Amino acid sequence: MLNANYNVIGMMSGTSLDGVDLAHIKFSINNGKWSYEIKESETIPYTENWINQLKNGIHLDLDSLKVLDKSYTELIAEITNHFILKNKLQDVDFICSHGHTILHQPQNGITLQIGNLPELAQKTKHKVICDFRVQDVAMGGQGAPLVPIGDQLLFSEYDFCLNLGGFSNISFNRQSKRIAFDISPVNTVLNFYAEKLGRNFDQGGSIAKSGELNKSLYDELNNLPFYSQKFPKSLGIEFVHTTILPIMEKHILSIPDLLHTFTEHIAYQIGTIVKGVKGSMLITGGGAYNTFLIERIKQHCASIRCDIPDEKTIEFKEALIFGLLGVLRERKEINTLASVTGAKHNHCSGKIFLPN
View 1 (cartoon, one colour):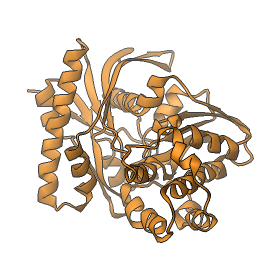
View 2 (view 1 turned 90 degrees about the vertical axis):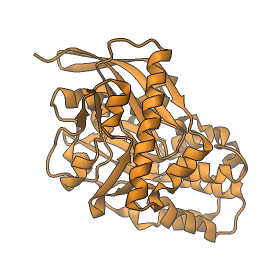
View 3 (view 1 turned 30 degrees about the vertical axis):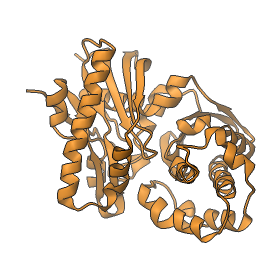
View 4 (view 1 turned 60 degrees about the vertical axis):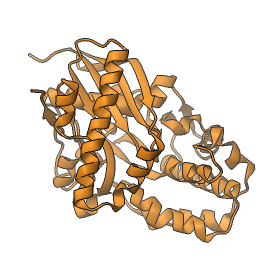
């Protein structure tokens, strides 16, 4: 008989490189309806050395990647052990870890999330459920996005769920199927330019707000072929480096103007998805704190009520949902939707590692 209650740790590291998100979550299922409570939660920032290693991982050869994978697994094991000890967590059923994406080229059958080695279970002395993307890519899918199953099961009262992280992604129901896809880069680009001014990020979007729209750059960004592609589709950091930044750098503009124009671009692309639709949208991810970006999104999504939830849900929604993915994997239930990723069929993804 399946359990009705689960006590887990969800762990996530995103492309914006803010750090490792950890959330202690209690899940319950009653009459087929899931509920959750985020208990203790924390983001452990990366050191400058780790930020550089993760940024440069895309350029490493196979042997160097293996070394990075091992050392990163040791890092997150140490972080997890400290989180458990600090919060005096007991009776944790398992740890659900996304790892950190280094390579994401589903068109070539490749996706790599480091930190998903069996050593994670050995070093934490807990069962670990991880590596959720690889199976989907092997089945012809994009391996992303994986969060929509959580949107469907935990936030069904909203017509749209929008996440503003390293990239923006959205999920919603259409003709009884969950649809989801990446929309555009967000913090991967905004933070890149904020760092040129010696800041980790543009607080509240104040620098962007002070700039002006450059119509030429704005139009060139909006005309990129990715935006007219049909879903399922997903983005990786490669898109930022090979496509977005070269376009941005070609235009000789001040950083406020670059940030202003790219913020408007983000909001416009989100607006094209929900154009002409009435309803409600839940907005989460670090970008929810960017008040200028939210202001522009509301302008481009005039017929949509935009809701920003409590702080824990904003910051730890992805850790929360990877916790749920782990629970569904433990129950041998579907946790990856073919309508979202483009895989051959729905499936139950994730590896399980047990400590000795």
